[in-house]
Amino acid sequence: MSLAILVGETVGRAVPVVAGVLGAGGVAVAALPARVRMRAELRRRWRTWALAAPLFLGAFWAGPAGAFVLAAGLGAVAVGEYARMAALPRGERAVLWTAAVLLPAAAWGAPDTLDVRTFGALLLLAALPALFSGDTAHGFTRTARAVFGLLWIPVSLTGLVLLGDTAVAVGVAVAFGDVGAWCGGTALGRSGPLSRPLSPLSPHKTWAGVLGSAAATAAALAAIGAFTPLLWAAVLTGGVLGDLLESMVKREAGVKDAGTWLPGFGGLLDRVDSLLLALLVTMAVTL
Image 1 (cartoon, rainbow, N blue to C red):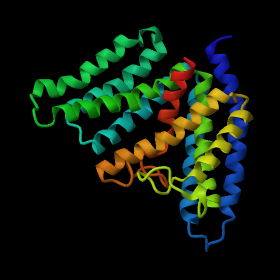
Image 2 (image 1 turned 180 degrees about the horizontal axis):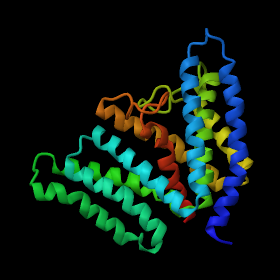
Image 3 (image 1 turned 45 degrees about the vertical axis):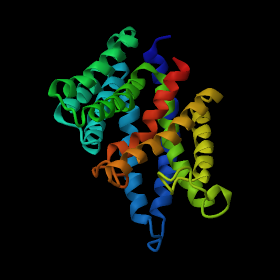
């Protein structure tokens, strides 16, 4: 059975699940009374989800070419946001943008080329701008931040192409996990042991949120027929730590959001931070 057929089957199972949850969520958000403090923000978030879900699933419905376009598009925007936060000069930005397109292209057209030689070349490319500029004050910092950005964004997003139907399951599960984390934190994270934060990097992310994310992630994978303990653990681990990872980057950069163009969420990185690490961990344990 071809990869395209497998992906189409997984998308076919995911569409009614996602549509049902979006429909129920839309009714719930519309019914919120005006006195609810977060009503406007929740409505903005629901509209963003309602737009993002068909774009994500539609890309995979189009087959590997659609997955490539999705990965390259997300990568181009995300590396731009990261480069601004990391204060990367023009040379490192060019390396990141090039990798954001070429790595998913290689995953689509020549996946066998993605081996240790590829990553050695990425390390060299990340170092070249600082090496040739003779930056003795910040060269190492520039290179380290560029290498981190390459691993975090373009390399992770190749998973949208390489993982096939599993990438659909990961994306849906991460989205459900984010909602479950918010619900769990709101319902159980106000007092008691579950209210303790995971890390000082993000005091609002609590163990109650992890519990909610674990339940929602498992439910999403089961609903689309993709649940395995290994995949669930990979998505949950990547999702939780990915959120904290972006919080660390934003804390050092001194910004609240990576961008401003997604209503209710901030920037694209604020929306895909969990997905990035979830894809990377899933590739590590399944490929």
